[in-house]
Image (cartoon, rainbow, N blue to C red; front, top):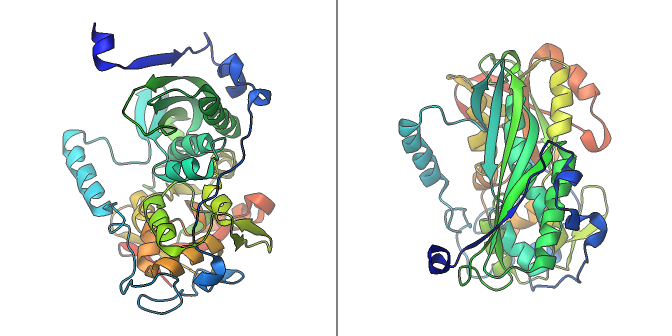
Length: 405
């Protein structure tokens, strides 16, 4: 039989007959009270003290340059890179270029499909090798938030409100308790973005993954009125660039971050300072769930004056901000405008990573960028406080690319 031949069991989580809130759309067995939290495991990694870091820093303050001492990584004469860790951004860009020849409509953060007087906006993503740290730390109940965030943050860049989300969970042997924790995070992420968890699929594929490991992918759909689409076409020189703070590394750059950890010699339980003067552990800092910006961004859009939005993921500032600009325009970024989370300083010092490489790999503390008119900028900035704080981080200039000052 075909099913026996490929040894693939698909367990379809049925969707409700009509849209419902995220909590209701999840299976009834996935209630919040049904989750057990197992003790976290520890892993040997580098201490912040060994990296020479202390307190907070501004992004404009350079960390140890390549070849300087105090990195905590012995025998490395050159700084580490994302490509050296196994991820080639240029190759990915080339693939997108080639796909563009086959499907010319692609290229934005989300795909737009005309539907009456609206566009349906779709996005799909995973969480990359952050999953490896989930396996090592035992933190599985927030990785689903990351999964939702990566898709809904992409589609909100067009001004779309997320409507629903679908997930895909694959493993070699289904551990129901573990999968339940992961799905709980997905439900939480859907609640944060005010969209329905409409359904999903669980694939049990013997011999395909290591014991206790799994993979995730997600898919989100939203909608925006055709006359309200944000596409960057009206951006002009002099427009203001506003940044919304991240919670840390989010869900990109982990192949490099994990390589840094592998070479350093600390424990995931070692202490790392935060920008608020408190401390956290290395593991908690790296596993902090990706911020879901949907509600904050939609509120800012409602005030008017927003012309373009970039989700800062793989490629960092350097590759993502230009994606929303018309030809001939670029960005000037004021690198002292915000405080970079200490986890990035630690990664840079231990890995001897150049500033340019950091800015093209990590979000450096800013997870979402909005390009707004000069007239709207002050009102938007004055209306953001506390956890929803925003920073004026730059301006649009003539000439292409991102320039750091």
